Length: 240
Ligand code: CAA
Image (cartoon, rainbow, N blue to C red):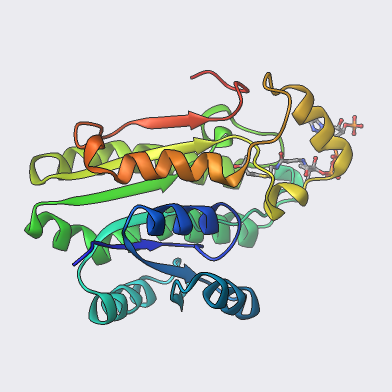
C-alpha cells in the first residue's frame, strides 16, 4: 500500500502543484480545501485526486477530516500545511478580525493538522510534515503584520516540532516561497507587484511547480536526515 499524504489548500495554486507532485511520486493524495467547491470538483475530475472540505483553522474539523481520510485511504504519513490566506493592510487600517483570521488559519492550521496526525506518524515510526512558510515571514513585508507574524510563527513551529519528531523518524521542515504566480500574488496591486518583481534577482515570479519540487524532495526517503530546515525558493529575493 502506498503512503497517504494530505495537502491542505491542495486543489489550487501552489497546493495543486504539490498534490500532483506527491501523486506522481506514488503517494495516495487527499487534497483538502476550504470553500471553493467548484474549483475542487474540477480538480478532482481532472486529476482523480479526492478532495475533502474542511476549515484548517477549526481544530475539531481537522481531527474529523483527517480521521475521514485515514478511514478512506489509510493512516496519514505525510502532511503538507499549505493552506493560507492574506488580509493585507497597514496596521493603522488592519482590523482585529483580519489579524485573527490570518493567525487562525495560517498558523493555527499547522497546529491543528499536526495534532490530528503527528502522534500516529510517531507510533508508526515514519512521517513527513512540510509547512509552507513565506519569504515575508523571514523578511517582513509592508502591510502584512498578520501574515508575516503567522508565517514567521510557522518557521518556529517547524523547528520545535522537528525536535519532537526526530527520534521517531518524523521529519518536519518548511519551505519559504517567494512571490509565485498564483491567485494570491495576482491580488497584489499591479504597481506594487511591479516594484517587488524588480527586486527579484532571477527577474520573474516563481512557478507553483518550483515549490512542489522542493516539497517532493522533503517528503522523499532521501530526505530522512533533513529536519527542522527551511528551504527558501524565492529567486534570490531574500538570502537567508
Ligand atoms: N515600503 C515602504 N513604503 C511603502 C511600501 C513599502 N514596501 N509599500 C507602500 N508604501 C507606501 C506607499 O508609497 C504610500 O506612501 P505615500 O502615502 O507616502 O504615497 C503608502 O505606503 C501607502 O501605500 P498604498 O497606497 O499601497 O496603501 P494602501 O493602504 O492602499 O495599501 C497595502 C497598502 C494593502 C499594504 C498595499 O500596499 C499592498 O497590497 N502591498 C502588497 C503587500 C504584499 O506584498 N502582499 C503579499 C501578498 S502575496 C503573499 O503574501 C505570498 C507570499 O508568501 C509571498
